[in-house]
View 1 (cartoon, rainbow, N blue to C red):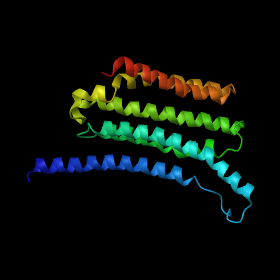
View 2: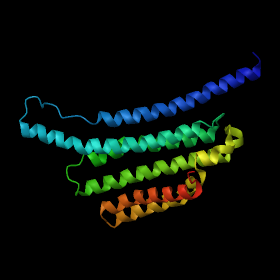
View 3: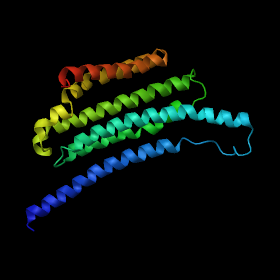
View 4: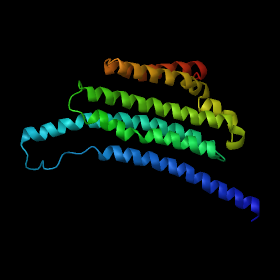
Length: 222
């Protein structure tokens, strides 16, 4: 085995470590979220109404976990597509990948803010919803940054890069660079002026509409 073959094997091994580390972060985040879903201690000898109340309190936690699981799964599936083009990596890619993983790691904290509140009309719940939405927008933005960096350095880092634009839907990702900061500013203003948290939720719906329209325009299905 010559020096070039050894270098290629070493590069493949290190690249595999990068991908496996990313997958491990996703798995740990999902595990942490589901650990938070548990009944309080001492229910074996509790009265029926206490047990019923405890199970009712699990409903928002299950809903929050299911919603977050779906969002994180969407991020993970797109991350798989990103990694499928990799043949090498550099410090820039590693830094942006860590930034993206950092944004995803905030989900357990954000979920705890909206599932651990007794009243949905409290100020704490409103702030929790805004933080949760901010984490979602932050995740989409950092993933767009990661994809943008990969597209820019495709000759150095990627294989089969002729199909990257369509597979990663790069034109849609470019829209995020403008849409997400704008929507984030809207959430901040709504929170500042003490608006109903439902208006903040509409920003995520608007991002979904923007995504659907851009995909239909730039990447129409046959």
